[in-house]
Length: 609
Ligand code: M6R
Image 1 (cartoon, rainbow, N blue to C red):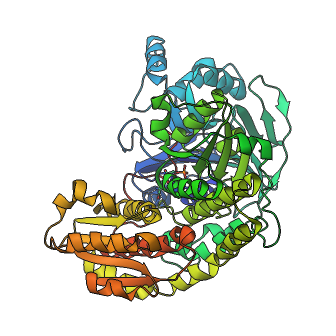
Image 2: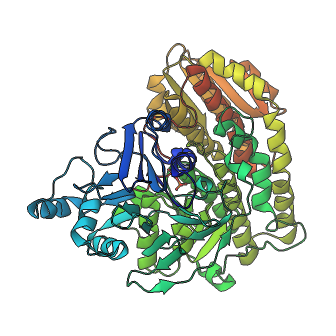
Image 3: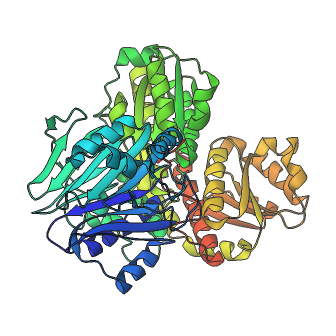
C-alpha cells in the first residue's frame, strides 16, 4: 500500500504535501515524491528513493512554488524501490502527472497496447499506464479522461491527477483503495487517510468506490462513474488530532501501547454495562438468525487473525457455536463450506486488507452474513459487511499493531457474550459476572504498564539472540503467536510460537544450550502441563522467561526469570498478557537500533493480495 495526498488552495503547496505525507508514511516509506503546478504554469516533479526526509531535503535545495499539487509515499509492489519507480508518474510530454495507491492488475495488457499506440515507458511499475491512458483519452476534459482511463483498468486504485492542461484543478478517484476529501476554507485536500488532513480540517468526505472528485476554485464536486453529480454527507472527525501524534513518546508504538487501558474502555463503553443487556448498535443480526447459525468463520490476517483465534475460544465457550478461524489469504482457495446459516466475522484494523476483503466477498457471494470488526469508519469492510462492530482504538500509526489488537479482543468477547445472551447459553448471573470481569480490564492493563522496567531488563538480556521461541497452551498459545509476530516484525529476530503440547512432536529438536524460550502460563487448568513443558526445554539447556499470573510463585524454581501479570478472569487474560510481550518486543527493537514504527519491508495495511 502507499499514501497519496493532494491540495488545491491558496497556500504554498509543497510544505502542505510534505506534512500530509508525513502522516501517511506508515502506509509505505521506500520512496516519496510530489508533482506541483508551479506558479509559472509548469508541472514540476521531485521524487526520490528512501524516506520522506530525503524528499524534504531535495525540496529545500530546489523549492517549487505553487498552490496545486499531489504527493505520494510508496510501498513497492511492482518494481523495486528506486527513484524512477517512485510516484508521481507522468505522460511523455510531462503534462499529466498522477499518484496512485493500489494495483492495476491488467497493466501488462494495457502497457502492450499503449506501446503499440506509440507510448514509451520508463519505470517497472503498473502505475505508469495511468498517465498514458489519461493522455490517450484527453480531449479537453481531465475528469472525463480519468473516467475513460479507469474504465480500462482492472484492480484497485486511489488516484490523484494534476495537469498543465487544466492547471487550477486536482481530480481524483477511488476503487478498492481508500481516499478521503478534506474540506477546508477556500482550499481542499485529498488523502489516503484522515490523519493527513487533520491539522487542516476535521470535515471530510469518505469516498466510496468509483466516486470521482474535482477540486478547483469552485470547491469540491463529486461524480459517479457515469459523470452524474453526487451529494455526500460531511463526516466530522471527532477524535483528537493528538491521537495521531506521538504525544511525548519516542515512538508511536510506545504511545499506542500506553493508550491500551483507554481504548479497551472505549471499545466496551455503552456496550458492556452491568445490569443492562449487551447493546451492539450497528449489529442487526436477529435472535432467530443467531439461533440458526451452524458455523462461524473468523477470517483475518496477521495480528487480526490472532485476535480471531481468541474469538474462537470465546464464542465456542460462551455461545456454543462452532467456529473456524482462517487466514484470509488461504480461505478463498480452499472452497469453504458456506450456506445461509453461516456467519463470517472479518477482523481488520484498517478495513482495507485485500485478502480479507476477498474472503468476505466470497462468503457473501455464497450467502453468508458478515459482521465486520474494524477500526476505520467508512472503510471498505465496514461498507460491504452486513453488520459492523467498530473497535474504538483511534488511529493506529505504528506498523506493528498493539492497541488495535486489544480492542479486537474486546470486540471478540463482546460478540461472544452477545451471542450467549441471545442463545441463552449463559444464565443472567454468569453473563453479569463475565461483564464485571471485563470491566476490570482497563485498570489491570494500567497495572501491567507500571511494570515496564522489569521487561526492559529482560529485553536487554536477550536482544542479541538470533532466535526466540514462544510457548503457551490454550488461550496462551494465541497470545504466544501474537507475541512472536510482534518480535519478528520490529526486531527482525527469528521467532516461532508453539502450542506447549506440540513441542515434543518436533520443535523440541531445536532446543539447545542457551535457546531463549518465552512462556505464557495464565490458564489455571493448563498451568501444571505448561510447567512440564518448561521443564522439558530447560532440561535441553533452554533459558526460560515466564509470564505468569500473580500468586503462582512455584513457577520460579522452573524458570530463569518470571514476570507476574495481574490476575484476571482467564478467558480475558490475552488482553493483559499481550502487553508485556508488546513491551518486550519494543525494548528489543530499540536496543537493536531498529526502526520501531516503520519496520523494513512492511506496510500498515496490505491492500494487495
Ligand atoms: O488492517 P488489518 O487488521 O486487516 O491488517 C492485518 C495485518 O496486516 C496486520 O495485523 C499486520 O499483521 C500487522 N503488521 C501486525 O502488527
